[in-house]
Amino acid sequence: MEKKYRVLIAEDQHLLRGGLCTMVSSLPDYMIAGEATDGLEACSLADTLRPDLILMDLSMPCMSGIEAIAVIKHQAPPIRIIALTIHCSDEHVREALAAGADGYVIKDASFEELVGEMRLVMQGKRNPAFDGHRHRHRPGWPDLLPGVSHQTQIWNTLTFRERTVLRLVAQGRTNRQVGEYLQLSPKTIEKHRASLMRKLGVTNVTGLVRVALDMGVLTLPNQTGELARFL
Image (cartoon, rainbow, N blue to C red; front, side, top):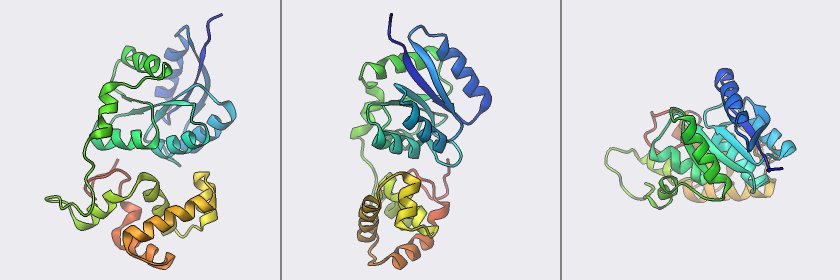
């Protein structure tokens, strides 16, 4: 009997999630292992179900798809993940790649295109168009970029994980609480905080929080780019 790949669908829109489940179930070599409505549920189901593939919406409540990809890839690297999104900018592709996504499909693509990406990913291959973003220049501090503020350039030097940790620290969460939220050890969170302090030029958590609030971190988008641009 031919192996069937088990797929977890993570999508907060009920109609779209149902449509994906129906279409994926119609494929002879795929079956639906579960459905998640937000990033946190996706992480939980990935841990318990251990699917072969996850179709992950990037814009979901509670925890974004990007954050969920990073957590799942840390916990279970063999799980293949395809990012599903309405966005096609270089920044979004780079963020998905950095988080550990194996593929990237725009939501207005045809189902045939999605199936093609699924088959490619399950063969352990990466779409050349997706992989090409790995080598593109990533703007950052201290490079001076015309029309981009100093704060934005500092923000662009931070890794995705550092941005997430900085947000949570700015919300007043302890290392243990941040670790529980991201499903990482307090020691790992401490390393991220140390890196943040070094990059932001502060020596303690109070300074870190002050800089974070001054930068408006709680309202900044996770991806690189202008401060006013949101997902």
